[in-house]
Image (cartoon, rainbow, N blue to C red; front, side):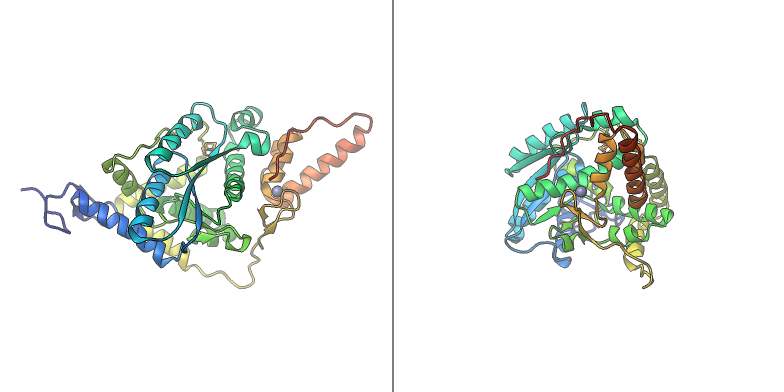
Length: 346
Ligand code: SF4
Ligand code: ZN
């Protein structure tokens, strides 16, 4: 006898990874969409009139995010305007293909699309960065640049909010990584559903409580068009370990993912722990908790041919770069400075 759907009593076709309930396809869609709507309304993520840039990579998370935001905006009359915003990191054989998916999504969902590229913003593609620094710290450069590129793109679009496709597994992994690194500031920030409100361009995560496995099922049953190849420069070993560990935990106890997020949310930080204060970068004007932002520091490292000095804690890498500049100024007084790569600031 077929298993009955827990919600409607009809024949079930899947077992929800999040709850373990057997459900039919329609009831799964209903529950999935209602839960995301609850996250949005309960967290006050949007208000009527918001112009929301949806970070779109062509992958499953952002494709589901774009699809469901459009659906819920119409169904529940949020009154928001949605625009797809993609970042082209310049990774041949990966991002160029995934951007083709976003271009198709643009037509499928009838949403405008803006693409910003590392090459235009920083004068460097990830292909060129990897050529210079190898495959060890490439994700540090890519992550910092992408974060700022989304801000820059959203500002160009005159959006007042950014929505990203981070799912529950991503957030649980980040909680784990921040605990293991003892990074208190990030630990507190990583579970927040909205961040960056102090900088005037808040980012929110409507899929914060949505399990990755359910996103894959939703995309599959809805036949959404998404790109599923991994980045060719994807070593990110530390996150990889956290991911494997989390998957092992999930196998034993599916609620581990949500439990970890709840642990992060309930953490209270001692009053005397110094937390970074958000301000703006004196060089590029974008959000930073230091006088010069990490993107500018990394870019300076690349342009000076000293990328390794720019990696690591901001204050230390600034000191190293400043010291390197002073010593090269004093030893090369008669040598004209090398032509710099372009650093476009909007
Ligand atoms: Fe960038 Fe690393 Fe992600 Fe590739 S895996 S897109 S290099 S952050
Ligand atoms: Zn900067």
